[in-house]
Image (cartoon, rainbow, N blue to C red; front, side, top):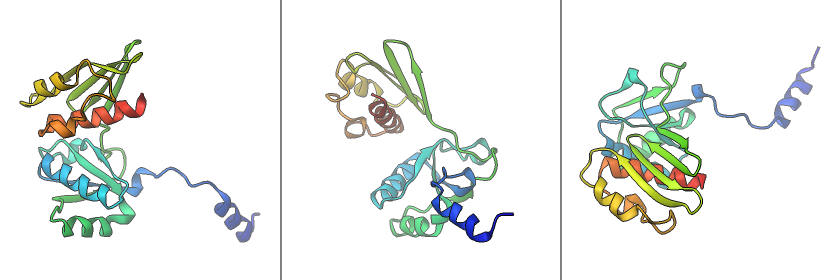
Length: 183
C-alpha cells in the first residue's frame, strides 16, 4: 500500500500535464468583429487564449469563438468588461460535443505548403518561402491582399492585418502566422 506522503511526493515531482478540454471554456460573441476585438484585449493583457471555430451546438452565426482556461473565467470576464467587450455566452467545454473546431488545416504538396485558416488559404513554395497563391473568402479585399503578397517571400510580404480590414483579412492573418510558425 502506498503512503499518503509518498503519493504526494510523486505528485509534486511529476511534470505538468497538458490542459484537458474540461479545463477550458468558450467565449461566444455576436459577430467576428467582437471576437477579433476581444482577442486583442485578452492577448494584450497576457491571457493564453486561442481563436477557434465554434462547435455546431453553440453556433450563433459568428464562425469564431475564443477558447480560454476555465479557471480564469472571472478574471477574463472582468478584463473584457473593462474593455466593453463582453461575450454573449460563456460555455465550459464538456465532452467531445462542445469541443471547438481547429480552424487550421495544413496540406503538404511536396514543393508547396498550404495553410488554410477558416475560409482563407495561403500557399508557399517551400524552397524559397515565396507566397505563390492566396485564395478563398469572398471579401472585397481578397484580390488586393493577393496582389500585395503573391510573389513575395513570407518575410517580405506585408502582414495581412496591416493591409486587410475584413474577416477574410483576419483569417488570412491567422494562416500567415501559422505558415510563419511552420516555415
